Image (cartoon, rainbow, N blue to C red; front, side, top):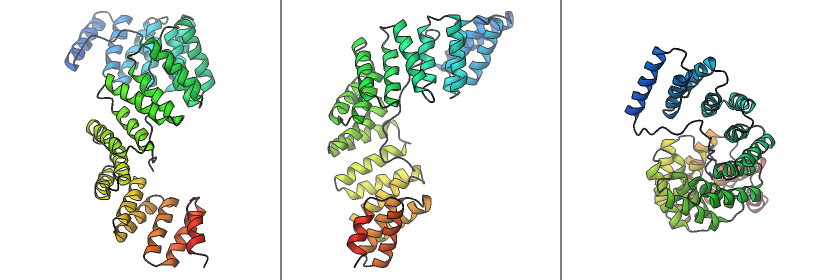
Length: 362
């Protein structure tokens, strides 16, 4: 089941081992691969050629191919600091975090003052070792105190550990160092949401969007914050912008449906929930809310079908039992209503106890 509210994910920024290549299209990337391949044929032990080709493959998101080339670069030069760093990035991209940590550790052994290696290792440790992640990011900042990326990444780690005030301070520093740091505004907005500063999140998402008008997640998060502030019409607009950028993501339609529901535009809400379900047939929250919209529109049979479907997908979905029970009350079937309320209560529904007291104890 999808979450009812989705605050978008962290955007960690790995430090690069080499500058981003000044190549603007895939054809020119392909030409570069051909160039370095010829260099390797001419000099089979040319570790720099393998490294450069691996870097191009990383840019093309061929992470497995990048690792193969970087393996060769390291084989022919086992002290190739930049190749270990780049290979760590490729392993991180494949979610192989432990292997990435090993490569970054190898860099640090070769060069204990490599701030990028500490930054990247700190990011790779975020999943399992928050304390170790903070230690590495502290070290990266100590080595390079003017790098806004390192503060932003440390802010991400602090947020994972629910140190929201510490995270906020790091994002503030990152923004002070780089006032156009779009990801820092976006991340700071998430922390403000966590701290229930919804107006603050709106401001940060708005700034992120002004810097990058195609920043889809910023529109989505701003919609969530505006919904919390009951600014439903503006939230609908944000969801529409998000959908334009991410038309295949069911969450955009679901959240827009929620705001239309709050505006009592049940017909349009039903349409958006239906689109959400078309994209993801197991999106139980969309069935639940579509059922509620149908109920409010007087379509009790349609509502029951949606609650039945959500229960079939997730037999432990307490809210679906409770909502179906409410429909049964409206249809004067108290026996079935009370059975649903009792099932909902057994599954942890907060509302079911009140409904049982009101309808089932007479």
